[in-house]
Image (cartoon, rainbow, N blue to C red; front, side, top):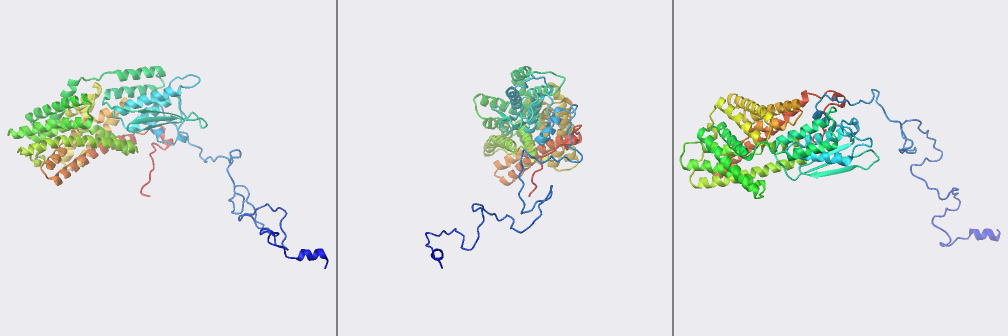
Length: 547
């Protein structure tokens, strides 16, 4: 053995040998830096590679999407359906149908109003849209109807990819010119709410004209009309509103069995409460305290008549005074927002209703408590003794709807229709409850459904809002007597009976709200939008159903 070979056979020290060095006799690959994967193909294993669009294997190279080498788009054999909405349909139905579609399926907008060659002034169009939406939301319109009007204004000026968003006090709208441009977003806060259905109708007329291709309205002209709508005075002065509130209370007292003396007493109590509420409003007190103060005079007059041993139904006096204060408009709007998926706005509206109701309860309970302490003989069982006077009650219900319409500042052209609608509602309720013996909740729901159905038909005929035709018509159905007798039982320490009566009042209120909304949906269900069948009709959101 030569000397070099002996040197090679000598064991080397740990410093001279690496833990990663290949053992003696093992041949390493040429590329020492290459790494292997557990998904790599073992040598000697021949696996056929997939070709074309065949399903890949776990041993094949994964395919990644590349924008430069995108796969061909899939087209159904029947083709891609084109959404066509005829212009003869009301703009409310067309815009609502498109709002309920996915953004990618909405048809491209066709500018109705003339714009410059460079395109519309996007910030000014969005500002006009927000101002119109503010007036509608402040007037008590539902969130979905406000979004529909805002969407119609944007599309009238050719803005595509617009997404309006409405909550209880905040309106926002976002517009993205294209898929590569940054979106433009604007918002507006509703600070004050004023019930004026004449102004609401004027705003709807403006949106209708903007959606009409035969009516040319520039942005400046639209701003001018909107400023005139804001400056317009209410159609009825303050003393007419006060008198209408008194007549409303008197008519409501007749509905629950009152006579002429009760009519006058309830009217005086309601007018006094209205003036006190105006005084509190002038002092800047919140509406909660205004409702509390306005509820005390009718209850005080009813207690005074009982203490003086006047042979009248004190319960009818108090019930009539409560009719003018019950927030039926806000309740219907809140339930409608909840049924259409606007849960945040619905929660805020219903919370507002709860606060108003608590204010009424506080005012009446204070008066009833002192009345009981003074020895007033108030009998909750009088609720069972309501006399049935069909003709007189129908006349009283129509008077109640008429005065309610005046309180809502409706147009004079709509007062007659809503008065007849209120009379029909009470006739249906009386026929089902008194003559048919059906429960008051079911009777109220059916009558309110007819109110919503007729109101929606009238609004479609006039291309206007349905609120002026429905809100005042539900006045005769409001649960005034159930509310009063529940409060009276609580004041007499009969809490269980009082809670049962208040629960009945809440059930009646929900029946009214759901009935009105259901009547509106039924009218849209049978009166379909022409051409919307290709867009799957009125697509509603498919939400989770318990899983």
